[in-house]
Image (cartoon, rainbow, N blue to C red):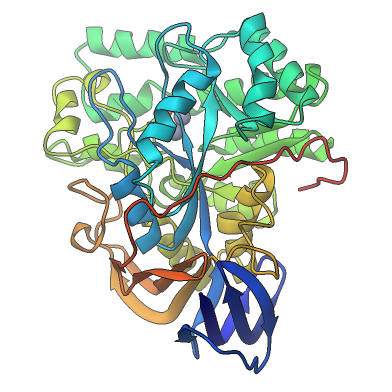
Length: 466
Ligand code: URP
Ligand code: ZN
Ligand code: ZN
């Protein structure tokens, strides 16, 4: 199959020029001006912006929490991704049975994704306990299964103790992998949660108050120091929300430590006032960490501009407002944590970031496409427009005005956290390996066409630098 995209403004993390792209058998073969090629699919991109397909490095499809199951599976979730301009996702596997092997959840997740996903995908490993057996399984996960990133949690039931985090990071560093960390101080959060409940303070606001910004700052600082003690083990902080956390990341990076940070649109565009809304609307925004202040929003934008935050992902984890989220109606601790966002990410960051002048268009591509692919071993197959890369392309109409509302979105859930956002510029076509899979807000591809990608390690390459 031959696809030609003509006359577009092609933007990558480093370039911005008018030209044509020729894709054959799913791979970009040539980029140039006035390319003369036969094609099966011809796309005229005059007046449009042509960027690499988005890479969302943090989704939770098929996630089962104790009280509810996230509403998107790998079909509905990746359809939403495709319609929003994301052509590759890396899903965080949920916890398995106590004591299970690392490949237990991998097999479960392959079962979830195969035959369902419509964009290409991978998984992050999840670490629920650390012992010699788990550490010995890492090599097989990386070399055989193509999973070089693993997440540990500093909170929740399967949190990992500091000494186990050190052991784990030491071993993973030796193998060239990277540890992703949900960093919040569990003990303090637990104490505050139950104190508030005892005092009858059970509204959504107390979800935020029970997870103060210092809990994130302290945990980020602690895990950065542990990574340093592990011999500068590569560390990726997921869903950064605060300026205090960012300060520790900045200090570490300024000293040359291999620390990377991800934030999400909700922490850039929404703030804690949401928890004070009437009719328990605040339940929609119960996620961990919680929404923060407007000042934090601005600090994070600033951290992106200055290169201290490398990735914008989503933490997409959708629950129905009218049913699932109502579990927390009388007690915020009972509300399933998470919100949708996989479809909204690229349009929101383009409109709120690029169009509003907060970040450059190259930075948009860098944080939404290129850097996640680089950090997680997908680059240059994913994350850029270059000969040899997969033909994953998104065409943005910079003049298209869209009011975000649940009705136009595809996640299997009954609300969007960004209802009413007036966006300028929107993805109007998503191409995956040369095939048009979404057009004018609708999915036009086939169920199950997405492929699992075995990822590579990048941190044993001394030239890796980001
Ligand atoms: O509230 C959230 N973020 N739910 C998903 C799980 C996690 O901690 O990332
Ligand atoms: Zn998390
Ligand atoms: Zn998450």
